[in-house]
Length: 254
Image (cartoon, rainbow, N blue to C red; front, side, top):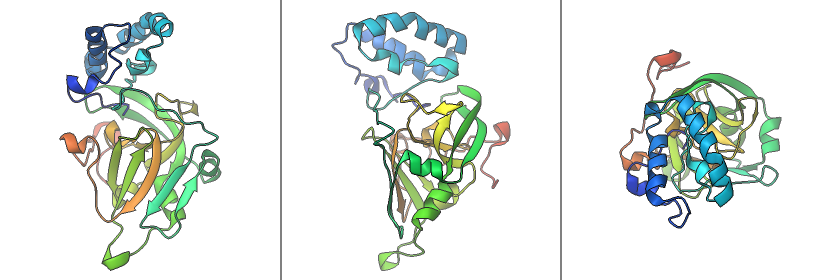
């Protein structure tokens, strides 16, 4: 997601090989995004501005995979950026719940709002300081659906699984983690709607964990009886992605 680039160069090869920009250049620029910690924010922004006319002219979509302004690096595991119209967007909530739901952006905005201003940190090392977020606490979304105390055959609701409308990305949290007040379903970022590149119109934001836990292009919330490894966990990343004590964020209750 925002902070997780391809695990290997092979992962990057999903970029259109027929694009006018050469394959080696594509992989090289993607490498800059993946290794964002090695590229200063000023250089990243300059690179984006430099290549903007080129990518606008050839319409390859390559700029969507380059380092973004403001210090963010934009990554996608599918090689393209999915999109959803805010008017037609729906977030499904299901699994071990009493009241399955399909929530629009307007439904989420009508719920009690919560806001956080926290750093966004990538597991690869780069960080964007003091990012303002607005959304709904994930705990409130779960309460609205009514998490079941026990399901069929004695199953217990102990975890939450997230899916993305990119069709590939998944993530999970334990129920205890999901109910933290610094975990939200976000619809606003940096003072405005969340852009397509940043995972809008709605995404998960898990403040005390590395960014790969903050599922972009959020399409589904499923209450489950166990933690299920997400996209990157299946590729060797930690299931519990606590950042640590930096900026006051850790794995202690808040």
